[in-house]
Image (tube, rainbow, N blue to C red; front, side, top):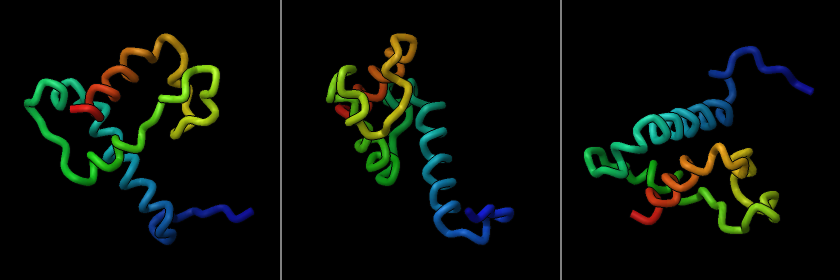
Length: 87
């Protein structure tokens, strides 16, 4: 196993950081996107379009991303993400 001390030396980690930063921005501003006061850019639209919960809770392991959002306490954000995708 390799431990990377400087993420700036690893392109894959830097790319993951860019994606994580965009997801954080979408999550932080989701209500603004849904109300139309902000708009997603092309990259953000692509990221959010890959969110899938369509397999149902009994097949959550087939969803991408594989996340804990199947718990009922996360349903509000899941519903918002679905609305954002369809808008």
